[in-house]
Image (cartoon, rainbow, N blue to C red):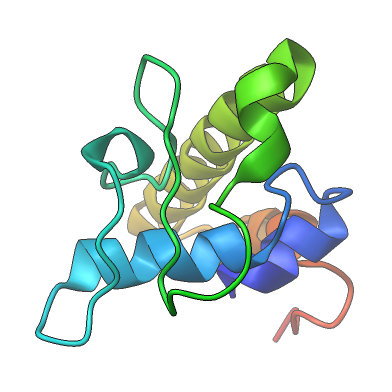
Length: 118
């Protein structure tokens, strides 16, 4: 679902593989990629500081590559997940208020037109 959110909001986290790397780092386990702690928070928003990537499969360039050199991309990658987290909180609060229709609309805004309204 996080990758669908990324698709629907013009790819604020790029490359999208970074989402998988962050998720693996949050989940843990013996198969987890070793990535700098600056990447992960409970909202998947990178922490302060410049993230230094890793190579989860030991192939290809470090993840996230261009984020280190592009302040605009870095700011966008930090802000977008926080905005999405705020939308999730809004949807959860609407559901707690019994406003199911408004809740579903909030989720659809977040995940796109394929998210059902019923």
